[in-house]
Amino acid sequence: MLLSARDVLPCKDVVLSGYSALSASRPVAPSSPTRSVPGCDAWTVQISAFAVGAWCVKRHLRGGLRASYRADLLDHAPAEVDGFQVVPVCFSPGPDVLPNRRSQLCSLIVSDEDHYDEHNEIMWQPPAGTSAQRAISRLNDAFGVVGVWPAAWVAAERVISICRARQKPPRLLEIGCGSGLPSICALAAGADVVATDVEELPLSLLKAAAEYQTLPGQLCTRKMDVLAAAGFNKTSWGGRTSYPSDEAFDVIVCSDCLYKHDVAQAIGNIIGKALLLRPTTLVVVTDADRRGSQEFLDELDKVLGLSLAKLTPPHFEPVPVPAWAADDARDPFDGTATEQVGLLSLL
Image (tube, rainbow, N blue to C red; front, side):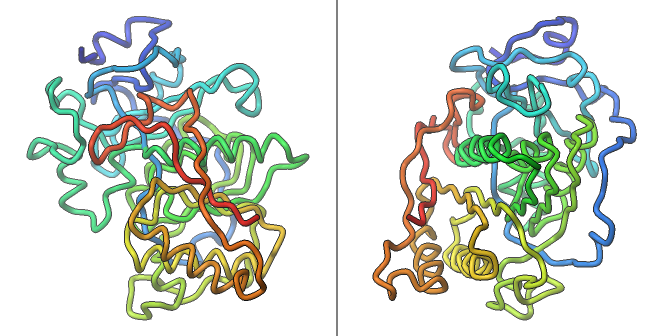
């Protein structure tokens, strides 16, 4: 069954399987009090975008009925971002789980739910001319804007736990943010977030999501190419060729970005150097067994010297995807439900 905006919006307490169906006529969000970080735009770097995913109403609404959507969040969600039609992907982890007494949070993804028939289950076969098709054809890396990926739900759950355990909001860096699910959770807790991606559109989606939900944290978005940031490719897009040694973060998050060998190695290099700079930094890296995962682990081990010191090398431990993940955390590559992903362990 497919739901359209006509099916959803007249209802005050609509329950869906993780997605809200909104038409292109819904109003654009007004300007928001979300704060920006002074001098944020001074550093222009870039990073590989992939990250976090979820689903939208254009597919079958399978799985349990989990999220009761607040009408105010639906009504104020933007219809378009940078000329692309978008839809909120909302989730409700449960009572007293989200910070600041929020019952629900939403990320934004590129979506044309009205253009899909009920048999089109896979994101990578969009009809010609739709926003999803244009994003896939125009962006060098469109992974992060067309869905929320299974590993992102685990990263988001971990970020929520970290924020709840701290007395004051952390400073958090997200590498390859995509639609920015972990960053949104951190912003809801009042964190100072620096979100990076190799493409501009994911950053615009994250900013729009933070603004229309009036999240209290400080958001700075930066384009970053990890190959340039790690010094692996000095001719890449980035304005810098190495990780900024003058910045420190309480938390570094990277979700499902290890599907290219060179990119995965670069991310391992960046995170390793960040840990050498500040060993107390908490690192949240999630992976759905992508092909570059071993290169990431090897480079991280090399930079930190763990094996050389006869310590346990970095590895991924399987952890379950949270039950509140939208639509059974289906993978946008093939539509299959995901029960667990790998979470980086440095112990």
